[in-house]
Amino acid sequence: MEGIYSITCKRNGKVYIGRSNNISSRWKNHRKGLKNGYHVNKALLKDYKEYGEDSFIFKVEKETSKHTDTMRQEGLIYHTLKEEGTELYNETNIIDYRVISREDSLQLGTAVLSKYEKLMKERELESHEWNIEAIAEEIDSSKTEVLIAVRECIYSGYYSDKYTVDVVTHYTQDYISYFSRDKINNALESFSL
Image (cartoon, rainbow, N blue to C red; front, side):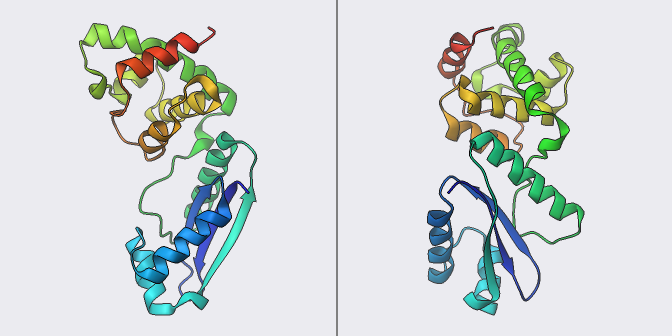
């Protein structure tokens, strides 16, 4: 089952929000890491050690069918909890997808990726120097809109290296350093503009 899940500590009310294309497998990995003392989220691990397994609730928040829907739903749940004042275990900020519609983000993503070659030549940049802020300025959009757009454009089939984009755009890094010129060129060639 694909979707959004939460891990809530009953003792302090803190919540971890995550997404997976296989929630039951992801939950097993979380439990294994917590039980064996090597979970990547140190705050969650600390509370698990202090309060014990029975103090945590694992819940499927929402089932989804498309990866782009999963990303959007994770952002919606995360930011709703944050706005409600819930303390979160998540160590990185998840993009707030509410700033741009999916349809607009796909259009913007196409524009961003098509402007890439032009910007690279004009500014004589290497691919590891592709600055999201420069792209956003060039096409008169916000950095967050550009990050969402590139991500959704790629997850919608315009680009195949999903892990790279997931790592780079989901956690709002300034540079898309994992893109190589060949990968971008391949993505641009696959567009039907």
